[in-house]
Image (cartoon, rainbow, N blue to C red; front, side):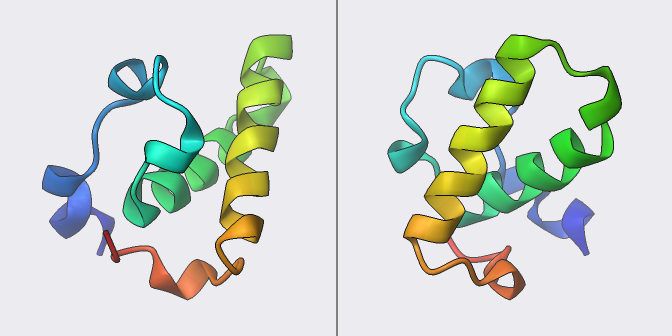
Length: 70
């Protein structure tokens, strides 16, 4: 399911210089899931980025089922 959308999802290093408001929905949901899985190993910067991603998802309505929308 995510592999089909991967061609639409930019890598995290491509998104680092962009505000999360400029990320598409698929990117937000994909990176939120990956970073949540890795959360025990995230440093302070990674934890802050995950918080920004979650806030942006909530700001957009918080519907995680829309992970393929752009």
